[in-house]
Image (cartoon, rainbow, N blue to C red; front, side, top):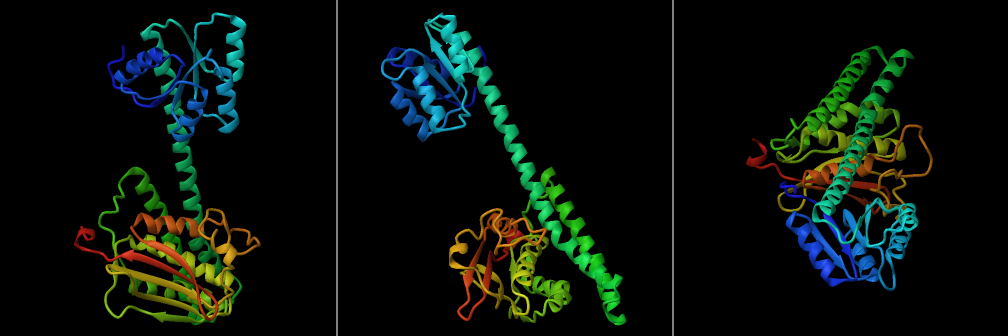
Length: 364
């Protein structure tokens, strides 16, 4: 028998209590977590409470037999992603073919040999857990692609904005160096984001010594977006912190999140003043505030505001994915903070980023 401790959860369904004890004891000794059910109703209830990695299902039971239980599982939990092995005394070939047609992945005949049962269980548990790992990796890769694509959008948009101005002779000569700087800095930011994600994927980015100065972040936002905001008729009201305000997050990451809020204001509140502020939050926390005097978010949309692929307003700008606020909220939460929305009394939208104050532990 396999001497390596097994992992995984198995639901054993049998109307004979003696069979449940024998099979449960055998699987438990191998390291598996075992759930038991003495009939079909118990099996359905147990599955609903805790989804196992494998089901050992007695084919012939009074009341709901194995086929009934399997049909109910497939109906209630479609698609059924848990492999099912029938345990049966039947040797009827037609019955076994019917079992495979119903979605069973394997069967074990009674009386069974412990070695045979464990070999089949180990094989199908291994396949199930491998499939789960591959699907998890695929999801993580997809999330990373979405994240990188979204966060590259802002610096690339800045490059296009500045280059279009220069190509069309749309600025005074004394402003040309500033637009060239914008192109260079935006391209540098884009490369920095890519390096950050590559480091995080390789494990080189630990996040233990990150810190960001809120005053410097506000100054960066003004310097980076001043001309774009001006082009949208937006006047900036800047409120820097009275004292040094340093929070425990990577400065580049905080810029990513806050510039998403600024670009949203440009998109949805053109011609309105924009407040950029840093202030004390809850004890031990600082807040970065981005507030506009635009139309705000309708109450019915506020509940969906931070859901993935949800846009602030109807319509499509051609490049918006609806991921920005969802990703921003997750990034801030990962740093131990919060991001939320408030409706301003005199009209407009206010987004608040609250992060823990940097301590000696965050300075490395």
